[in-house]
Length: 302
Image (tube, rainbow, N blue to C red):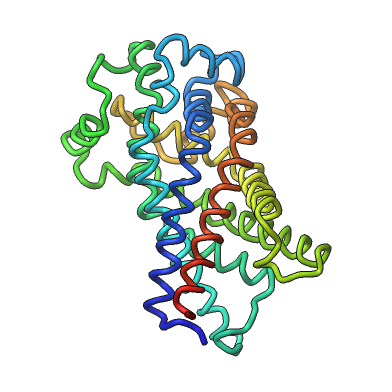
């Protein structure tokens, strides 16, 4: 018997939160390198140079700069994402005239994930804004774009409130949604397709394929997401970080400025650490989500 909708929503939300936390702890240093390379593509020769320079200048703390807002961002985003994902699947079942327990196709699940990402963007944007600013703070001070200041979560939050008000936390929201909607179609679609392939090969149910196949499927989904939407993410990071200087540029203006002044390659700056990060981080995300969701569903059934 399916749980009550409120119980199911709580299970999906909790499982998403656990998966989000696992994602951050497994991939934060590589995410920091990604943001630095996106924002300052001419400052670093490559991923290894960025990683080693940050470690030498700031230490291990520098690689985990922005972990607190990243945790808040990922827990909030994935809680809302997976809760909305479950709800959107029910909406698709209803519109398609299917039973509440009907198994959706991989494409239908991809559509559910794509729509769910709109809701998660609303909670992701403010926390990711703070995270990106913290991660790029050292380079912004070094290049003279901003005055030296206290680089803590609270100092960044106060600065945004003082200069831009509550609306300031949603700088880059349009670009975030433009990134998330097609990205999560690919993310969930590739993840479910990969799980289906494993299940057919292993002759078992998708929920029983095991740890390694789940992690590989999650990593594969993440790789597909980033290959499709990476330029959008680069523009988003640039908008959110450069808004510290008081420059308010929209998506298209920022996109064209980067392409004209720095070349198309600049839109893919930081792709290497992103692709290196995506398998452990997204593998951990889905493993945390699937394992905790399965555990809670079993507890409910018993």
